[in-house]
Image (cartoon, rainbow, N blue to C red; front, top):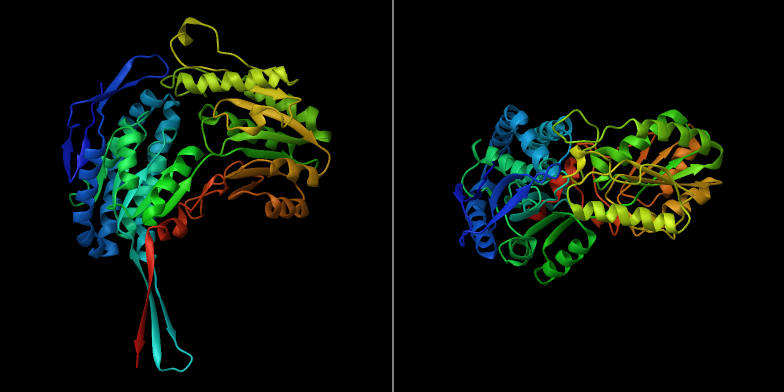
Length: 478
């Protein structure tokens, strides 16, 4: 059983009142670990430690900060197998996917270690020639980093890597649903030469520990990934002090397949993105729009491919593990039932798998629906489960109109062999990331973030680093 502790000012810390939170395996219901359940007091202590450490860390050269991050990346790779098991046991995803996530987080640390050395300034000459303007970038201050449960290590690394490379100190608060592997990740950075207080770890409810991180005058930057409703609360709570914010919130990604697309490639890509991590991804395919000419071929291929996906414990050789919680499974079931009651047709799945091996976990079969429309919840809300609803369109204008009929704008996908169509779709889809003949909009060297109710601010790339830096103009008279 795992028993991580909070890390404040470089020291392991338990909750002041002794309270703990139990973590259960979503595949079996068995106890995986107990973690301290901190609150406002522990969050305040962590922010205080980060504030004390900030001046020295901000003054540390980018090269020396990079050394810490590179060393941490190396240690995370050494611990990858152990951390992958933690991740699978606490959140359910297949073990090989957990290992990819952990190794990917190490890559993120290495990337930002080098990107931090490239936070260049500007030097300009005035029109009169009698002065010079120097524009420099300096770290904002203490950053509160609040990460979600679906990719608890990877998404935390996006925040930690950028913050520390920029010269900020930080307090990380992983989701209470998946704190074990994330705790090991933060511990690895502390073991890799980060001075005490530079990166702290608080575990506890968002209503207390998270609220303190947002509301305290000690935090200058809030980076949050999670539900849109929580993001709106954070925005309101941070407003009185005009804190810098980065909010990566919900999504409802459309997947458009044009008449001239490679249908086989599109079907394969769509199934992979719809059912990866059991659909529990902010950029998962939520809505599929097919040109009516390719509907029959696409559906046949997609049903065949999805029907071969193996469901089971993430510790076994499977494609889909359980959903993270019974709440997620209940929402998935409700969305399917609502769609069927409004005229949708069930083409695959639609229920829990049968068998004793599934009886104690939150399992659900990959599900494909067609004959759907926008009156159905599955087309209007983020399911965050293994459901792929499909409808058709007649032309590109209609496809774009349907795809944009959502309050979200995080990711969108389109498959076409026409350059004209690709440009048309890329420029008109209302989304922070668009994949053309690609089912992924994430790249270390490119910005990631949303439009509309999917949030604002960017992570990854130099844009992600700049989110932790302030601009300063220095004018020098001659």
